[in-house]
Length: 195
Image (cartoon, rainbow, N blue to C red; front, side, top):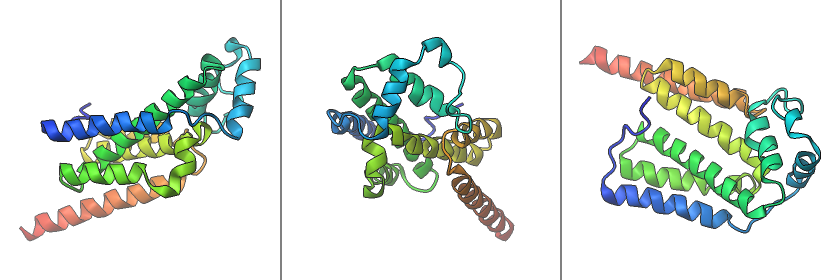
């Protein structure tokens, strides 16, 4: 599976790396908030052997491994949560970058991914670790779309499944991205017929 299909020149690659570093810097020191403390307490009081299979997150089991287990393993090391938030946002940024390269030039895709990840509408999700399941789910769906666009349907299904089991509200997003893919394919087929 190739995630690096777009060819980045040195300046573009530097921009992407600098923005990834910026994401870690921007989340550094933001700490924990609201539900994070509840999950941290659960992580500290639950035996590790009881956390390998989802119990609390039956409808969204991916969160057992991206969040609940993280609270157990990281414990009271607050700096590690800030780093984890930066890594999750970096993952979502790279997914958005892949998605935007389907529609735009690489420079515009980089700009679109930066604007997307810094969008003020998701500020709570970007700074609140427990809420980052929304970003992860979206990232998996964007990767699923890219893989389907490249006709790598097995990988598209894998990423769509991960996305679906990462968030409660993922069905409308899946339907919307699926509709975009269908319309894009129809448009491509119509243009081929005209040629």
